[in-house]
Image (cartoon, rainbow, N blue to C red; front, side, top):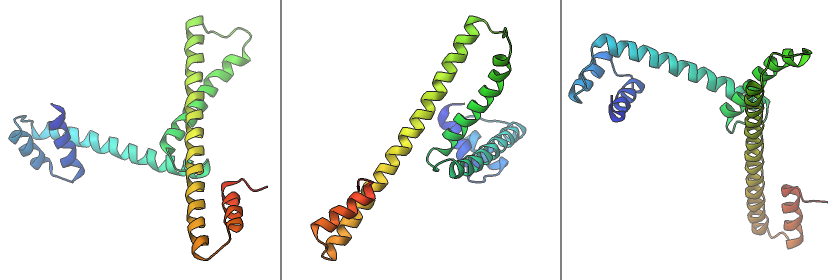
Length: 167
């Protein structure tokens, strides 16, 4: 089906439309489908949506435990891939002569590099978010302190403390 028709079906499923209503809508759009075909599609969509929701819940919990909810699903995936990779590599590393040809080794090295890059991107993103939050807090504190008549010296000290620049 064309993307716009698929989009209409997904929108209908997300809004809780009945199978009959979706079949009718598909017919109106010039893409008739049987009720059973739409039912199978709806069932697989609902299963996929449930799995995604489950992953999101786990990712949010993971993000809370391991540093922020920003991009929690990405962080979870990096961590899961790292764990899987480690479990695969450890037995090979323990062998005197691991069964790994040069192509497999190169693929493993590339995968490791990609995981490291993904982890660095996450860390950089987290740092930017923290820095932005500090700057916004410092600006808010400055406005409040100015309203209360604080001296420039006091304002600068408070801002330096918030930004982590205090000595």
